[in-house]
Image 1 (cartoon, rainbow, N blue to C red):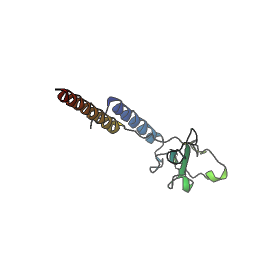
Image 2 (image 1 turned 90 degrees about the horizontal axis):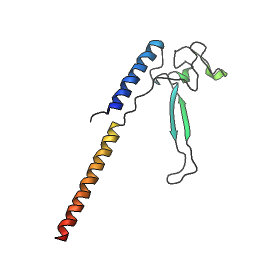
Image 3 (image 1 turned 120 degrees about the vertical axis):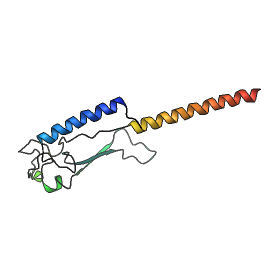
Image 4 (image 1 turned 135 degrees about the horizontal axis):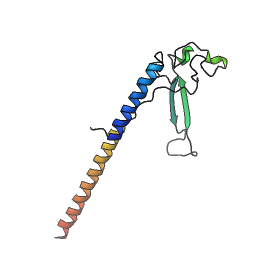
Length: 136
């Protein structure tokens, strides 16, 4: 599988961001990459039913930093449970720390969709050819 030009550009750009982040914050949490935890977004509606627009967001503190009262960005001990929302050492926010972005590659999905499109086109041409033969 080949990556698209945009995918490669994004990967290079994010790698540069990662290198800069590591230089500035060498003690960042390696498990959550400086984010302070792990978030996810989901639709709470039962399957096949839409309870309205929108989604729920869930955030679990990282066991290596957030649960140990360590700043995800600089590694300093900070007791975020005492209403401290910002690290006094580096300014990172407990809920909303900015960590290293992940490179999201969708090239496989694009290639798979292209293969499906080609297969559908081939089947359509076969149907057209069969229809011409049937008329003879």
